[in-house]
Image 1 (spheres, helix red, strand yellow):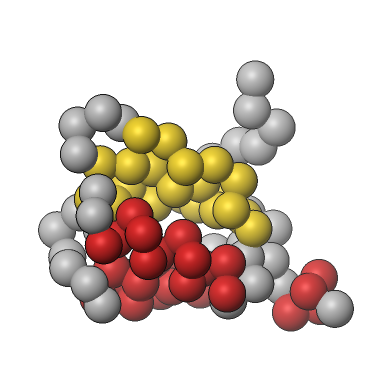
Image 2 (cartoon, helix red, strand yellow):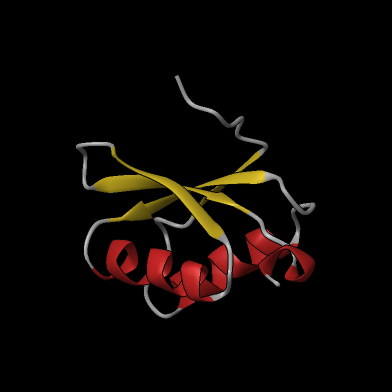
Length: 85
């Protein structure tokens, strides 16, 4: 059983890199601190680059789920700047 509840979802399967990270970042910015976002993204560059970029921004990657249809769900917790120090 997961130790998180998904608060919001974002589907970025209709955009290509580098816009995938931009869309994911905007979705995270709209979330309250500590909330959990599920981001649906395509296999390939998005699943390679978006998780890395989100982690570099300081957010917590909780899980990457393979939907076995060429897409993934990336589960992310928004971390505040105060929490990063």
